[in-house]
Length: 239
Image (cartoon, rainbow, N blue to C red; front, top):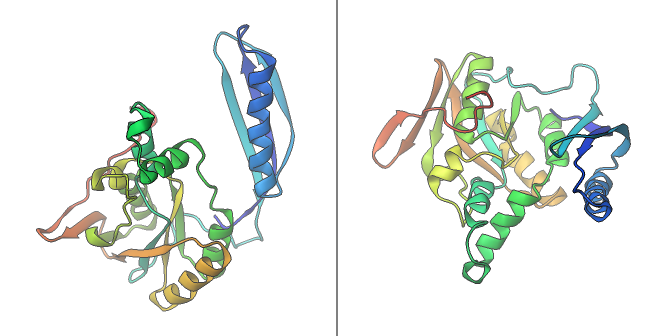
């Protein structure tokens, strides 16, 4: 949403068979992630239970009126996405394969699955460039785009050939896999070149134009065989 992360708390439940080394390694990873974004872990709660549970809440701040939600897209805006899609889903699929069969692309997919990047700087840059709507692709491109369309009361048309598919992923994983945490945003067509250059300079993150917003509802996707409805598929929390 264009905010800066500030503080975090962790509620940790441990079982009898968790040893101190595992817990220290867990917090070492948290500290590493916090250091990347000048984030402070300021407290939380520790309990004993029948299952291990890690619940983290992060608090951020943004100037009044500057937060970018999912409901502000305008007719004629273009749709852009950071990075590539499907890497995490591919990593999950590959995790059960023998390491000897992994390619460099496979290893990168595994990294994306186990240690996704938080697109903090990218979110701020998109907000500063005038992004009208934004959502992270945590549940799948098709599903999260449908949520943006619903909130903005508009329709979206995607160019299938433009969707940046991770080298280890399938097109299906790119559309519906989820857990990529890339940023899906709508911006005016006149600022795409500017923000693409800025992101490449600041973070080396690729920004790809993948579609356009228009009147109507829902999303469609165009490929060599024509245009079809893009069914919202992906991770649904209560199904």
